[in-house]
Length: 164
Image (tube, rainbow, N blue to C red; front, side, top):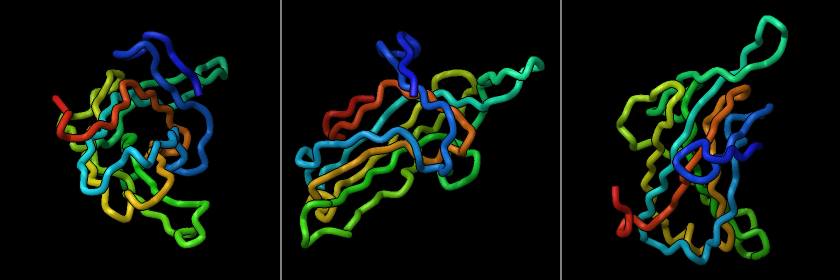
């Protein structure tokens, strides 16, 4: 994990390098679940860049910008998207219950531009079951093992306040 100063639109961007054994093992952020209200629609946005690792002639690894599929997060070679998970680990009545959105579809219609910042946009409605949980995570998913992604300007805001 690296932080890059002035790499994107914001002051810092997040870069996830190294080995991941599964596509769903990406950046994870715990959310304050008490702030997520039932039946409210949220918009999640971010910018990303995507890389693969290749070997130089001298044997050193280098990061090379590469393409990915923005429109189907279930396919191999898909671009990063977000997923939400809700649970209550300390409540005996709810232990074992997990509500998961699965990989969210990227609603941004622009084609992926190799080497440039690309957009992620999701819309998600918090269900009563989700809102009833004490803990919530948002995490990056659908990135193939061996790929590198960089994120900037991650936001999750109520749709009523979202301004494209």
